[in-house]
Image (cartoon, rainbow, N blue to C red; front, side, top):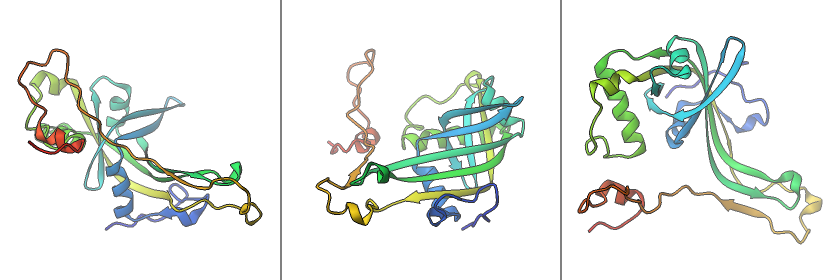
Length: 220
């Protein structure tokens, strides 16, 4: 397990007791999130791009069109900041001021490197697919050479990182505890719904078992 040293770059300043710097905590949040936000500065203009991601050890993998601004900038080795957030509950206090959210967030810093080795690039695309839908890579048609050429993969080695987590009930002021206002947590859950077949899906093709497992259907 890696522990990242708090620096001016990654230190959690607001409510520092919520900060975490161990890779187990940080990577767990990265893996749990479907979407990350990649921020960078180009010609003095800040940008932030939401995108899918996957993790490979101590690196985050990004992919997109080989002509995209993000892939071109990240693949050239410029510094990046990547953020992910998972929301777990709304925290409802007796006062508006103390309302909050229970969350897990991670911010990582690194520089991108274009993945040019074909085998490594192929493995990265498989990792993306399997992170989203375990079992899909072996079931669906895999990329053609033309599609591989049109897709860029960037590997971002994590140089520094931190996590910030809020858990627990509301923190009401003592003088508000007797107010006749409901207080507590409203949990947030992300679930998969019933698969909706494409309108041009051929008859007789059943929902695969790996999808049925994702939305909680019993097999058979």
